[in-house]
Length: 139
Image 1: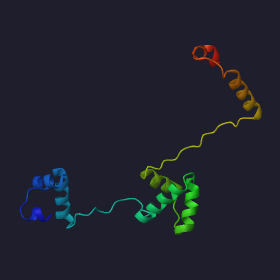
Image 2: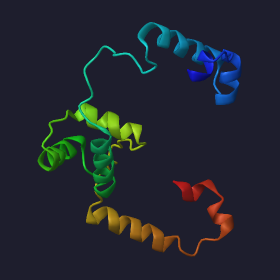
Image 3: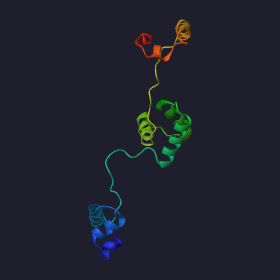
Image 4: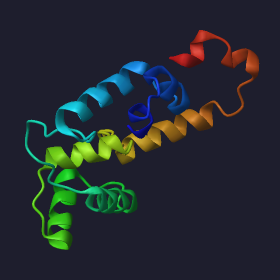
């Protein structure tokens, strides 16, 4: 703003700072209106967590990779004394690139399945490349 007050052009200031001229124009307009260039108050609920809390959450989630949002919520409530919703925890982790994954649900193999697989492998251990290339072994 000091540059503009001493007669600098908005386009020159924008070029030096590497931003578009509209950004400088908006800041100058805000400075004329409010006397400040800081963001004005916004609607919506205030943030429940600060930067330190978010960093603690990130570190804890990285150390406990398989913890659910509910488990993180309980652990962090005990450690920090702040109640935070599961959705906020998910939002913060998503911002850090820690996305939730669903565990793979696989039907466990019974001993009968294992015996059948072992028998099939023993029957086909001596097959040649020619035999493997036919469709008969795929079924």
